[in-house]
Amino acid sequence: MNHVIRQDIEEMLTSPMVDWSHFRDKTVLVTGAYGMLASYMVYPLLLLNEQDPTFNCRVLALGRNRRRMEERFGDWLGKPYFVPVYEDAATMTEPTGPVDYIIHAASPTNPRSYLTDPSAVIAANVSATESLLKMALRKNTTGFLFVSSGEVYGVLQKDVIEEEDGGTVTMNDPRNVYALSKRLGELLTKSYAGKRADPSTTTVGANPAAAGEVLDDRTPDAAGALNDNKVELPENPCGLRTGIVRPSHTYGPTMDLQHDGRVFADFVADAVAGRDIVMTGDGLASRAFIYASDAVLGYYTVLLKGENGAAYNVTNNDGIRRIRDLAECIAAMAPTPVKAVFGTPDAAYKENANKKASIRSIDRLLSLGWRPVITPEEGFARTIRSFLP
Image (cartoon, rainbow, N blue to C red):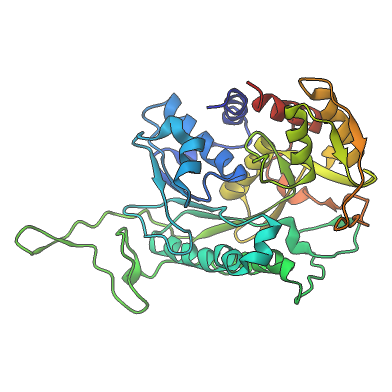
């Protein structure tokens, strides 16, 4: 494991914000597991098992790309508590045994995919969400977390944005498939809050029944007779607990510098490579930046302590920085001398007219005992160190 990531995760495990004992002797399914944010949700569970061999938290890490899974979690391949699942979240085979928590973080995030493969975006945010929620009922799952996006707010003219606010999202703009499908994923997640399993369809088997079909978890023995091998599922008298998190501009060591495409990821890539950091705009726009470990502690707080069915902004309003100032800060952290300079934008570049950072209220999340602690200066310094030899 990368030394900076290990430092981050060890700090997270000592944080009083999350009671990690909830995951002892549990099974956690994480979709999109090798992604930037999801991997930071997987790592703490793996280290808990590593630090305490009796912790017994089984992690089902779902992702379609075997190479990326192995690159991200190679240190744990073959460990009994780490189970890579190379499937699509929308069509995955239902796992055998209980699934106590589901974290649904699988979704295309590259804007190019919104235009080239919008159906995949919809499948991840809508079809997969509904499929996983139905599985959660069959498994008597304790908690379900949907990783949404601040894009759901659309265009909103408001100084402070709260979770119940909603702005305009143009329906006929294909680029808005991400925001609209995230909105529907949120509605699905909220609609399942408090639902209870139908005893006739509760299963721990790997083959869920079709609609209206009664499940039978018995398997035939050598003679063809059915043996009852049902596993007792945990009771969930209050029904399924669901939560929604809306990330903001999140960064950290698990960013894919080659394909991320966000301006601050490009700045880090330039600094690590020893290139001058080139700004194509005037750099006056401000954004709120939150470090990955802070964000993920917020996600776990919502999963374990959030109001059932509620959405939570996860951002750092003390981390608002102008793009120009961030570029100069990152340039100063580069391992070799580089400068932050202004370049000539290409013909396709369009300056963002929204210079002021939107303030998303985090009062709801702060009330649960969470708070961000890593400044952008410290967070980007860690991020750059993580990419250096």
